[in-house]
Image 1 (cartoon, rainbow, N blue to C red):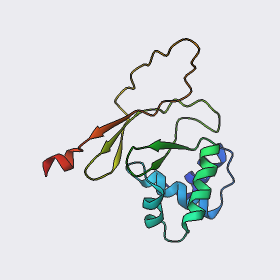
Image 2 (image 1 turned 90 degrees about the vertical axis):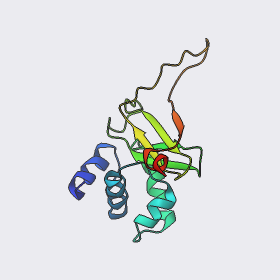
Image 3 (image 1 turned 30 degrees about the horizontal axis):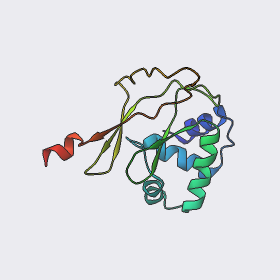
Length: 140
């Protein structure tokens, strides 16, 4: 993703585009899967871990990133392209956590099953995680 597109995405979510925030958004946009803070730290050598975390926290507040609990080594982050900075999110999808290589993959074409909650409960989000072996790890 070009820097101009990153700036536009930040502005659409009500986030002031600073150089650090643009770098974090660009790194997430160019990733082929959700990334952990540690993975982002290794990719972005020009910003320290606390700077990356501050950007991610702000992005979360403005609904620019999804935070995925992967059941492995913590949380992973991915850009949310479906909306601007409002609360509604129609970009929810299934994630797959590989128990061997510890990577998390987006399965955007796999529908999330509907969940019938008991009376009195209100659904606000779903974190649907499937675990197993990815195709690459199954070969070995």
